[in-house]
Length: 210
Ligand SMILES: C[S@@+](CC[C@H](N)C(=O)[O-])C[C@H]1O[C@@H](n2cnc3c(N)ncnc32)[C@H](O)[C@@H]1O
Image (tube, rainbow, N blue to C red):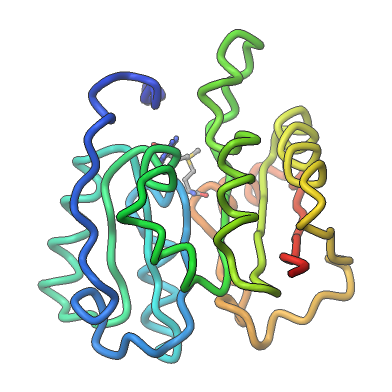
């Protein structure tokens, strides 16, 4: 089992320069989806190859994984996929990356690290400060998707997002995925593991009100 990376370590205080949308993508006018904590990016590779009408951006704190994913994108000449290395909390807090949040149509937090001990809750990627930034920068009707197999983490994330009055929970049971970033309901690596091991999945979808 790998060691979790401590996002509060000073190693992650510096942020790589994020290129403009037109530098990142073949067609910068396509809808943009952001996946936070994308690990090796397998989920985003699957999505980018199936849905050529969306652009995808992955943020991941493990640099080795991001470098490998970037090389694969170049080798395979994929024009609708880009990866950024760093702590998502620091990236979102940085003025140079505001344009990302202003342009995304949706964001996913799939199976974030749970950080079970209470003294480590600050290391969880979803924090009130981060949700506050999203509430100020996301376009109206942008969507946030959260998914986890840890009930306590779900409750924490759901409470943090629902406490911000600019986000409303959507009924996930009647949600139509067909026009979203993931119309085929592709699964992440962790999600496949969870399904095989018949663990429970807790998920929710939120919409930015205005
Ligand atoms: C349990 S894995 C889930 C990976 C993938 N989303 C999935 O569903 O298979 C959580 C990932 O989030 C990354 N991560 C944790 N905290 C992060 C942060 N603050 N910023 C960016 N990535 C982070 C971890 O390095 C890890 O790759």
